Image (cartoon, rainbow over all chains, first blue to last red; front, side, top):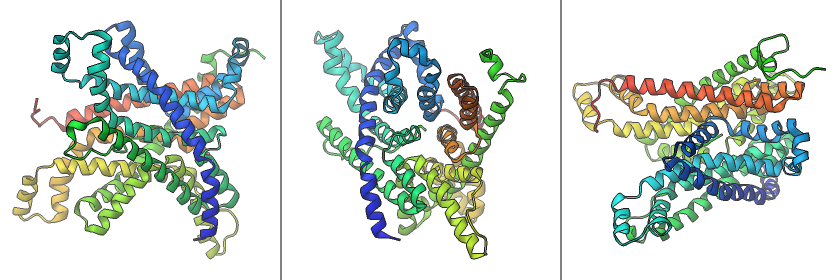
Length: 241
Length: 240
């Protein structure tokens, strides 16, 4: 094992970390907004809202992320004249925005189910108590339902964020030079797959470790009533590829 | 040249890509099944290391699941794709062969999927094993069953029963992960769509078709796993 080479590799690959984090956080943040909307649509009990949301979740969870990325990046090129006429082409021409869009749409589908689970887990007596105090509508949602739901959904949302960090690696296929993209370039230049793999894997593990810790800290901060037993570590669950 | 309609394009006519896409979908299913089975073997061994092993095997198994679930699958595929050829080349040069030896893309893909899904399946098997009642294992031991016989008659059937929902999830992952194998050049569904999109300049039509075929496969497999779960639980009383 060539440690000088691995140190150089590490320094090269670290150059991709900002883009990896940028893609992850942009899409997680935008995806959370869309997911909230989808979850509320699912729970509205209005069929016109519920069905499209269900269909959305079915489609985006049932197809590979790479297909979604290709559909947006290459597929929309078929409608280039129309998109140019609408002035959207500058957006869809950029691999960065295509990757962000695909990742956002994808994570929104998974996250909406997590949020829905969280919202539905709010104990009914809490809501009744709040109503008895005279709260209703947005105040009830803001003070009672939302905080409890966030607390419930956070561990699952934590693993979703980890999954998104992993999923950003697919952006390398549409020329984004984040960690995996740089790693692939380096492997094809040097043919030292094992060393580059170890370094790149290590970087992802460190990133995910830090994110897990941050989420654990937020969980700890959000649940003072459970302070005695230690917070449950968000588990790395199923990837969506 | 006249524009082909969508159905001519993906149909089975002289200009249609229907057969090519269906064959490629078959390839997707084949590589996913092989990868899933490889993952089952890996997963069983890793779960065994976690449950029955000593401190060394347990930490190895824990390390394996943590690492493989913490790094992107694409990296693992690159490792197998480039690393596999390099390793084969090194072995080949020992026997006097020269130059680049490529590993078949199918083998690379199935192995990479197996290694990654093995980490997930190990957790599924471990969880299912913990549900198997201790009493059953003690009973089996008390009638004098040896480890292998007990595994075959008592543990494996029950673990499989409890593992079906988790295995269903893993299967969905594997199916979607198989799309990543297209980077190695294996002509599966996504690769074929890419080729067709390139040669007809109708990328949207082909990627939508690929998405529909993927949805169809996931939908049918969800149904099959539900059937399997219902079948395996037919003798059980539901708690609720």
